Image (tube, rainbow, N blue to C red; front, side, top):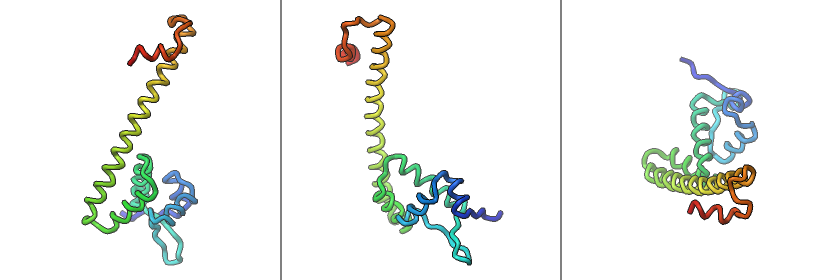
Length: 138
């Protein structure tokens, strides 16, 4: 089966990123386009998968410097697997910590909504402030 080739515009649409972002990623060394005999850049299905993985890493909060390290180590081969595992482990821990913090913040927002609802439907005493209401859940 022949490999599908995408010019930058089609690739941009396929991965959901503007051309400028793709060029930025190229400049930063995160992706490497292929070039045809006329010097025109193109991408393949493998590049779509790679961009997808990069976007997952970014979605965890991985910083550009960390992404660059990861890409560099990946290109160096299996001898850098320990560095990649350590980096991904740190990123995973940081993301989990951020999720816990976000969940805690959402819980306060849920309580605030419930408190307001209680005020509206008179199931919470009109004199009870939010601070006292929160003490019920601690």
